[in-house]
Image 1 (cartoon, helix red, strand yellow):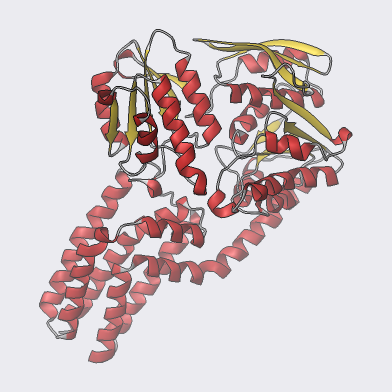
Image 2 (image 1 turned 90 degrees about the vertical axis):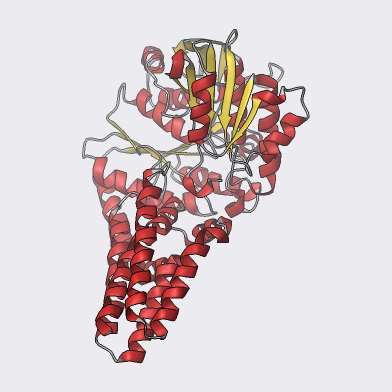
Amino acid sequence: MELFNILGGAATTVTALFALTRQVHMLQQNSYFPSRYIGWLKTVGPWRALGTGLLTLAAGLLLFFSLPLPFCGVCLLLGLIRIPAAVSGQGHAIKRLVFTARVKRLYVTAALLTCALTLAAALTPALPSKILLAVLLFFSFCTPALLFLCFFINQPIEKGIARWYVNDAKRILRGCRDLKVIGVTGSYGKTSTKYILGRLLSERYNTVITPESYNTPMGVVRTVREKLKPGTQIFVAEMGAKNVGDIAEICQIADPDLGVITSIGPQHLETFGSIENVTKTKFELADWVLKNHGTVFLNAGNPYIAQRAAGLPDGSKILYGVRENLNQPAPDFYADSLSYGRNGSRFEIVGAGRRVPVTTRLLGLHNVSNILAAAAVGFHLGLTDNEVKYAVSQLKPVPHRLELKPFINGAILIDDAYNANPEGCLEAVRVLGSFSGMRKIIVTPGLVELGEKEYDCNYQLGLAAGKTCDTVILVGEKRAVPMADAIATLDFPKEQLHIVHSFADAMALLQRLADKSTAVLFENDLPDNYAG
């Protein structure tokens, strides 16, 4: 009997480790913050776990009624259900679990814990053995509990490792003589501005930027440790935040000399609590730069930034922005004579006694604003007109951010899948509307993490889509509600509004709808923790 119990326990251990994959995946997508992970847990419906729970309960009853063979069989059945589900789930994930060193340590802890329970059950008398196996069954079913236990066991280790990495990064930064560090932050636009700034400054300087969306303290630390060399002259660090103090934490590591604040808006209000806290956090970068007697570059077109910038000393700030209203005072750098075409944008950069005509394949007012920010920093650091003009002409769209691509059946795709802010989404719809003479289709699940403003922002996106597009495809029945409500108020053909369950369903629909005279906009592609 003990042999069958142990075999059942071993099967349960393997099942628990595979079932843990989904939980670790979601913890990683929530930046390893338990509070954010709990927020995701609250959105998961109870019916998904009902079948597994019943099987686990059956295994527990069989265990305590001393029916070893059926107990072992049910444990194996649990494995046959949950292991393929875990593998399949990763195969269909939009952004798969990355097996970083931290993730591997979580799995090692989980493996040691579950194997220890199985081994202890094998070495103890009948009743204690059953209790230990019951605990193992609980962890197999309630994998969030197993994840939390492993997470908190590992916390002292993780903090020690992080502290060592941070100190090593600071040592490397101190060793780069004559290095200038530029911090870039904003509710949106910071990633694009970082890439553009890196391209412009590389015309003259040995420049390193944080890759992709590495905008957390450890992302900056990793970039410093892996990319910076003694000859590096410029380091551009993207700085993200979801809570007050996040930017200051990154500044303590990177110690920026210059700063760029691209925007302030209602992003991550669920964690910030208010737009005032968002503003305070973004201006932590300005506070640090001014303490270093540096210069901060501010988007004057953003009302929150403009209001806060008015209180900064004149010599410490440079304002930039798209001058849409000629009656307003011009910022230090602005765009003039702006026009769009199928090949991109054309405008003049005006400021500091310059008027530099530029062309770029980038689309949208926000990209013009981002180019202005980078140009202002470039001129401040000594770049010539020709260096800026050439670098702007060579800019490539950031992947999945208003990126023009050939698409199915000869259609054109405007890939804006990584855009998740209200203003940027409305601008993307306006860009789609500029493709005259073509059928316009938008595919979107809407916006998230906007707190109490989420419905209103998605409603406005629905209005814009309904007024601009010929066909609207909304992804996710629940998420589609505010956009569908908005479209219902318009004179929009009902047969041209499609609500589908997933992006795979949207792609199947586009196979029928798209042709060479079609322009398709992918607007925001939500991560897996917002599916549904």
